[in-house]
Amino acid sequence: MILRRTKISDVEDIYNLINSYADEGLMLARPRSTLYECIREFILAEEDGEFLGIGALHIIWEDLAEIRALAIKRDVRKTGIGRQVVEALLKDAKELGIKQVFALTYQPDFFKKCGFSVIPKEELPHKVWKDCINCPKFPNCDEIAVLRNVDV
Image 1 (cartoon, rainbow, N blue to C red):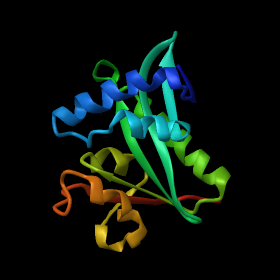
Image 2: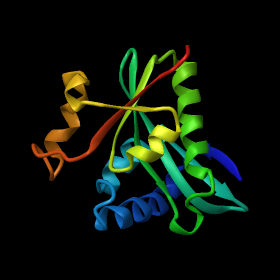
Image 3: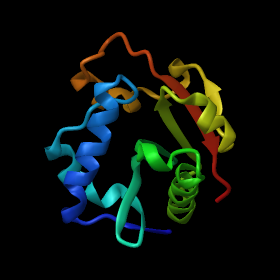
């Protein structure tokens, strides 16, 4: 398996995977336009050219980034791919000098296994919520906040 930066040609696979989980209420949907705009934030896992999953690191501020849109294909879940994607995103954060990474998730146990701690959402700075205004669940967010310090 390899981890690589995404390309424009990956958008359909990303869109289909994320939105299939969103249809089940397991993550938030993403429109294609957002995926194109943020394509450079993603890391993709693949094996022998087969798309396995993705995750994105979205920079919020000089010392804070968010892991977003982490999704692994159903038939390869629980094989360590998600953890490898998270570790690659944390490595990116470290290389950028970002001190903390958070996620808003419905899967807090997975993130705990990756070294994150559950925190009250209210502890996150207000700038984190700028994208929430467009969320269909706003203002009744039911995601759980997790945070991890990055050794820079």
